[in-house]
Image (cartoon, rainbow, N blue to C red; front, side, top):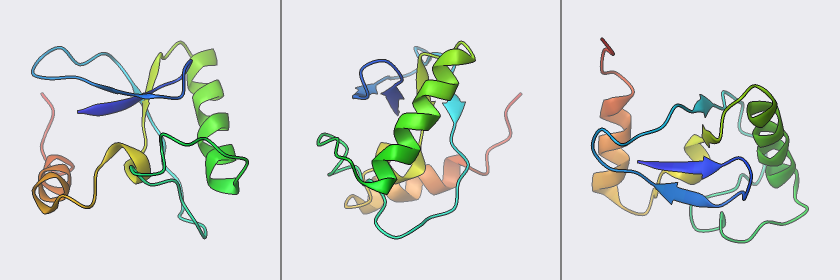
Length: 93
């Protein structure tokens, strides 16, 4: 699982049970969103402003990580995309 670090604005990858607590950005898509491929290139675009502000809010709420569908999922990989979609419907104990 990839999560966006709220301090560095970089993606970190976690495996198995080693996943930290994280916030989730719920948003509407507007124009050009930040994709997985573009997430390594922060820019002054509206998409990055939304992610930056979400990171700042998550950090002020005590979270070091945030999950954002547009940049934490590599949509060029059909297997990864399908796994992400399936995991959205799993019940959490």
